[in-house]
Length: 114
Image (cartoon, rainbow, N blue to C red):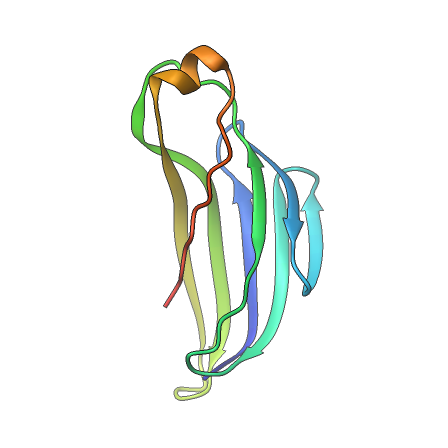
């Protein structure tokens, strides 16, 4: 069980966070760049959804690992009583069609942090 959970999303490189869709309290630190979502408490096996829309610029060449944003998770672990932090980079593959079109079609990146 965890409580006082917060997730901070920070855009990578020249990417821009267009919006964060959630029912939780969300603070904008830097428009288009950094947002924190305050989830609060969560029970074991319980799931919460947060949607982050990221605008990405053109790439010069295809890549299997194009960072969209970094997610920092902070929470109090009730088993240990300590505050824990995790960091994860969310990345996608970019193809040749992304280069010529100048934009990326909509993709869903489903990420779970255990």
